[in-house]
Image 1 (cartoon, helix red, strand yellow):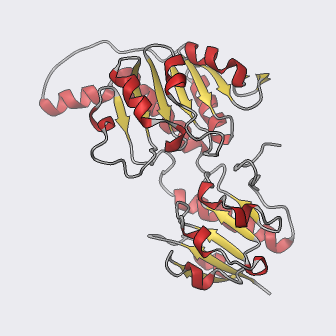
Image 2 (tube, one colour):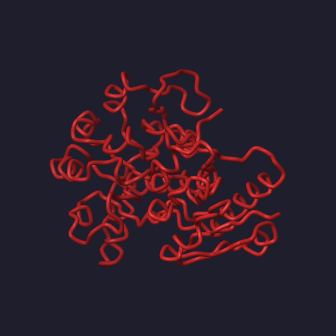
Image 3 (cartoon, rainbow, N blue to C red):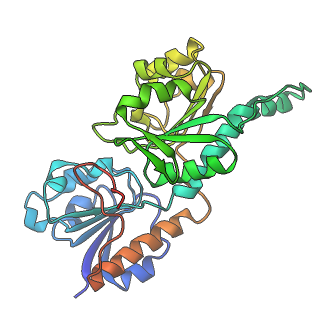
Length: 323
């Protein structure tokens, strides 16, 4: 008998839904409809991965809760509520791997834009002003990638390929890492921050990482360094970042994610010199939804055939653990 699958959606449905429907009895639900359809379902596909509605719609009776939840994103923080994480029968998977290369390319583009001051060039073009100026090299510049998961690794590989000197920051220090070379643990973080020309945030949002880039961390960064955040907005204390930029400690920042999205119009970040703002689109490329759909379909087939699922999240940590 086919599984009963609930697909939580907002604006879009999976592009390969006909193939999904051939493998599972499928119901499509909006956030408002979710409490009606979720109890008794075997599986939940959170196609709208930023929704906060799942916790409220989760069945009180554990026996009626889905046994598998797949999130169509790398981050799973809206799904780490006690009724789900505390139920050992519920398997949580995510879209790890889909966004790796697109986000790495986006980070490279942001670093180039900051170093070459493309925003300034485009503003001069808009004004029809001819203003030649020097730009910075990125070759041999030092980058600290904070977050050593699959996205951070893809970033490290691409930045190394263009001649940047890359190291990582994570929970466990180590040397001879194939992508980062050196991974700095908490004890070595301050020294690494003081040496980096660019700090790239690619960490998941967990209780341990929320607010990790605060005023003391920003003060430890190299004067004139730049911050790039493609992880999650709440990793950064935004007021502390505004202060560091206003005081000239940092030369700039490229921010794709924010504590509140959309970024409020009154935020000073919009108009600060040296700041690039993008609307949480670092991983969105042509056909990215097709890739998300294919990953879920592969896991659905694996479930039907009794094979191990891909991208099983450690619910205590909040992300997929390597190895």
